[in-house]
Every structure is written in structure tokens, then in C-alpha cells.
Amino acid sequence: MEEKEKIENKKSKVQGIKVIDKRHSAKESFKGKEKEETPAKKYPSYVEELRSELDKKDKNFKEYIEAYKKMKEENKDFRTRFEKDMERRLETAKIDFICSMLEIFDNLDRALDAAEISKNMEALIKGVRMIQAQFFSKLKNDGIEELNPVGKPFDPQTQEAVEIVEVEEKEKDNIIISQGEKGYLIGGRLLRPAKVRVGKIKDEKHKIT
Image 1: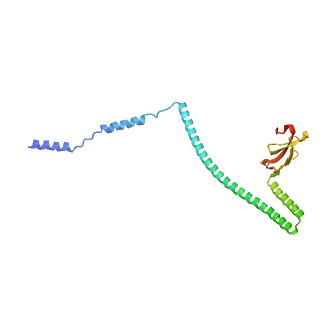
Image 2 (image 1 turned 180 degrees about the vertical axis):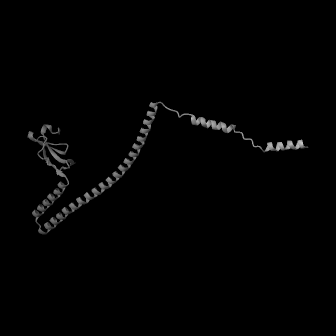
Image 3 (image 1 turned 90 degrees about the vertical axis):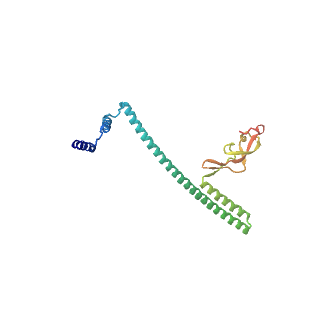
């Protein structure tokens, strides 16, 4: 009976002992040490230099892209402001021109009213001539220049031949005899060609140069 109790007591003591298997954790710890001890992969020096240069160029490229986007946005804003400014300038120039023309029309009305009262045709002609001079003075202030081609050689760049006139004198060949509509330049550029009559020797009538 006593032997049986001793055996039972030993079993209970054995059952109360907790067995811990540390083999797995030891393997993990060993693997971790292997990872820590494994040195980082090294590249040859020229490869490292190339990688460094590539990183630098990539950074510069991104900076250029950002600068380009910023410049493009600034240009867009500048173009918008420029277009609005040009519209305002054109509107102002148009108003100024119309106002100057209204002044001329006022003078024309006065000349016509005076001619109706006085019945003096000579005074009317004189008044109209004065208004014409005033009008052309306004045009000159805006850079408009009148062409005076009569007596000069025909120039197809600034003149349009509307008629050929037979001439006997050789010195009048290819010379402007008279003009119909006047021609004008603006800022040195052709605004409207002068319509002219060109002199030609009889046998060269159809050979306009």
C-alpha cells in the first residue's frame, strides 16, 4: 500500500513539471544573427559613381520639370495680361481717332452752314480745302503718308496701273501720267496702292514693266 502511494506521488510531481522546447527559438535566433552578420552587398567603385551620377541627374531633371511648369504658368498669365492690355490700348486708340474725326465733321458742318447762308461758292471751296488739310494733318500724326507718283517711273510695289496711255516722247515711257485714287503708306508700309495711268510708247503699249 505504501509503495503504491509513493508511485502515485511521483506521477503527480512529474505531471506538474512544464517542459519547454527551445530548439525552434534557438534556430530563429541563429538565423537572425546570420542576417546581422551578413555584410551589405558592395558594388565596384565605378558602378557606385555611375549610380551617384544617375541620382544627381534624376534630381536635376525633376527640378527642370518643375521649373518648366512654373515658367509655362507664368507665361500663360503674362500672355493673358498682355492680350487684355492690347485690347485696352486698341480701344483707347479707336476712341481717340473717332474723337479727332468728329472735330473735322464739326468743321465741315460749319463750312456748309456758312455757304448756305452766304451763297458764296468760293468761300465754301476754301472752307472744304481747310478741312481737307486738317484731316490729312490728323492722318500724318498717325504715321500715314500720301504717295505722289505722278511724273515718276511706274512701281508695281506701290501702284496699280488702271490705264495705259500712248505717248510719243521716249522720256515719258513707263512714267506715271496721272493718278485716280491716291495711294498711302503707314509706318513705311503700303496701306493702299495708288491707281495710276502709265505712259507707253505706241509700239510697246502692252509691255508694262
